[in-house]
Image 1 (cartoon, one colour):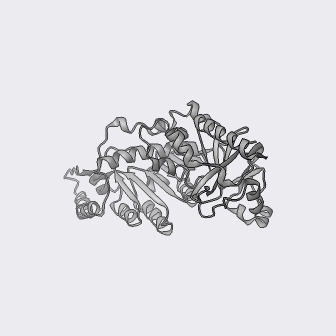
Image 2: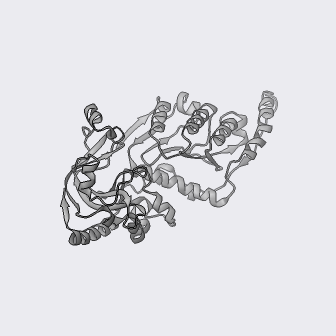
Image 3: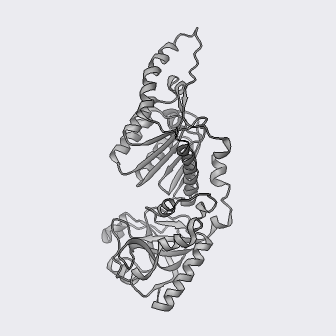
Length: 390
């Protein structure tokens, strides 16, 4: 895990994490500034496939006092960001895909990111913490959506644009005290959105959170692997080393003796697209020297996208085509939300949420229950098809 305490270059670090984001950006910030909103809106326009969800405050007083920008919100709305309003919001969180998160004191404003005295913790390439951050975010978002009164619309913005310039100009008269009590958004009981650090970290020492069991995905949705190869044939055809597996970002959480279930993005025996689990491997963990060099990239151009790797120390896969492995949907059907540590304690988890957990992930931690199910299923297939030793 790469953890750093940042107080003076937050904007540059934010931009760097944006460059690594491929799927989803989630932001919680009471205040939204014009410059930061413009930067993000321009980036979203250039990256239209990326989903951006923002939870903020919508107080007229904030817009009049220029601590938050109605025009910044409008730019983000036009860039297809989804914006939600929560009254009494104080938390600040920035979550990038499922890999990195920023938590701290900084609002998404020029002051928060550049000029104020702020401090934030950046956790890069830490999927477990990011899962907890996203869990916190989506729990909060679910409460807002359930209420139904928290979606920021162009109508809301147009109304504020009629009042804010006039009120801001009038505030120059220091003999008059002004109070702008207009607030829009959802009011939630304090108990449904506890302290952010507590919510994300309170269960970090739970049994399930420290299992060394992972799903490790090979292949992508855009480049699915044919299901008539076995694992060894697949590695040969794709010019991959049999005892290595590659990652787009540093897999710093993978430790020595962890177990990776080798999950191939392919098709089942009915040619339905789905990840297929074909075996498992023990690893020596990720080491800082496990990075490809320029000669590797020249010989194997695909490693430019996947420059980090871990080595297998032992393992085996079924001696059969990929299509005879275990469908990931069968794991979900068996274990449900208990498949993943971050979902175990949630009261309601939809099938859609469960099935989206692995989207665009190179690896994801699973529970003891999921491990037990997979080992039983794999052992049955080893008896049926035989095994290939890694």
